[in-house]
Image (tube, rainbow, N blue to C red; front, side, top):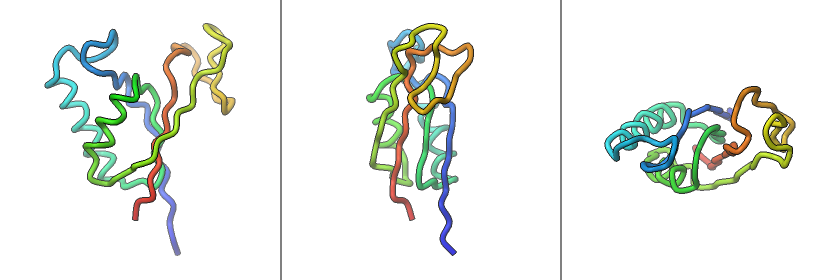
Length: 111
């Protein structure tokens, strides 16, 4: 029987160096990428959804670091309700979260 592996993870502020919520140094950013890579590669998901990714640049750096390649990318942006209306397009809510931080999804056809 085939198995389908879905992984979801709030990676807590995956921002580039120099971004307001990003790490102070390149070494800190590299360490975060490496820690995320190790877990994702160990799990080998077919689809990975990530929350709190601050930019496509940070996401691309994570994707490039993965040994278990997940080459496709899709983004779900917050809706237009603004502060207090922190609903995502899927209807999921994030109470107490900044609605301006998008949810990101990365998918791949891993085997």
